Image (cartoon, rainbow, N blue to C red):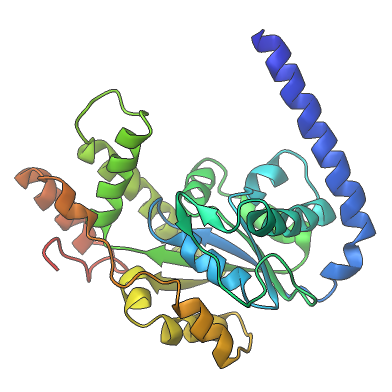
Length: 287
């Protein structure tokens, strides 16, 4: 049975790749004005989906939600197939899923989610998984740039690490992926800092520009922070777009760290590691 399942999965994969290649070639004229490919790096449960959904609402940006461009590149997808698939999944997120992800609506009314007449920026939101992929295949961004022939821009979404780690542990319990009934804060803390090492390496190599977007600052003033992000992407905007986007942003950051009683030593150890990382050093457990 497992052999049949694997064979069926392989056939479906090859069929999807063939369709994407054919349709990507047919619609390649739509991708001639693309100037940058957008990659999210960072950590699970940090607010990547919100940022990607708001960007997808911009008339010149197309973003897919967790299509996994780097994984598909590794599996043999080429330029037109990648770009077509991202555009397809952007549309599916709007048409099929009504912009709902993990029970939260990311629908921006009266804007361009799932559609674009002139694509200038295209990308794929994967966030924490992208960091994990780059741990094992650090050369994939270079291969992506070579394959697409366009600039790669990176968005690094940062949330208070104590909140991120707590939410990772909470979601593991909810999805029954944990072998314990207690939150594995120690284990997810280790996973979190493995991903910070990937981000630090990318910053040190400086092959690609990286934009640090702080979750709490974005929640506090979404229109201002969205403007700054669009400047980084070299795009213009109108006030109606900014206003529509700001209406779906949460009213305040969710402090998941307060869900659990963090062991004193783990809290201290985590804080010490946070203090040693430049882009995290602003964060404290009690702030």
